[in-house]
Amino acid sequence: MKTITPAKGNITRQANKVLRRQRIMDTARRLIASNGYEAFTISELALEANVSAPTIHNLLGKKQDILVLLVSEMVELVDAVMSKPSASDPIEGAEIFIDNLLGLFKKDEVFYRAAFVTGERTQLFEHELPGGIYNQSLKIAEQICAAAKTNGFLKGDINTSLLAEQLFGCQRLARQDWVNGYIDLEHYRTQVLVGMLTTYAADATPDFHTRLCKKIKALNRGK
Image (cartoon, rainbow, N blue to C red; front, top):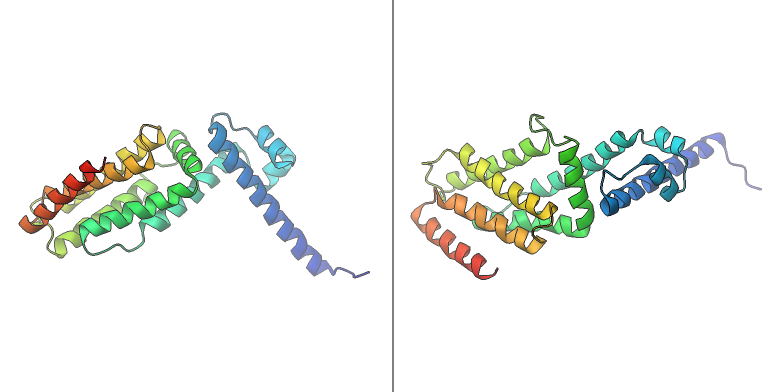
């Protein structure tokens, strides 16, 4: 019979602990996606994950701690997608941005909807936080507008910070409509793109303005 050394046994115990923790988190993800965060309880999680409530408390903490972990996981995934470099052309860049974002949501649409609701209702998306999803998204929008101005697509008559707020607003409004079930992801895409391109049009150079109008008409025909 092979003897397990104390060091090797400890490594095995730690690995099992990580796996158990991940299984509990996956179960919590599924429960929140299916039933909403209001109905989510530690007792139900323990039952579904086949562990005791004290085990959950020891590995993950209380209900609020689990919600924070889940929303933080979602925010990290969204930030990673949003921070990917986009094309220098604003129209192409807008399409890459929204397609990357919706590609992420399509992987687990029910969960992402639930996670956004959880984040909003538990105030885990505090706008004042420098590293929060609001300020991170606004920072990316400002970089996009600044690049468009530098590359000669925007005239610079309108402050880029103001344009950035409008760009972010287009995405946030569409996201809220989707989260609440008013639109599907296809309409989410169209709504964001029309909003972003219309925002650009307010300060676009003549040639770029013409291109924007053509693209907006094409998007509206595709509804």
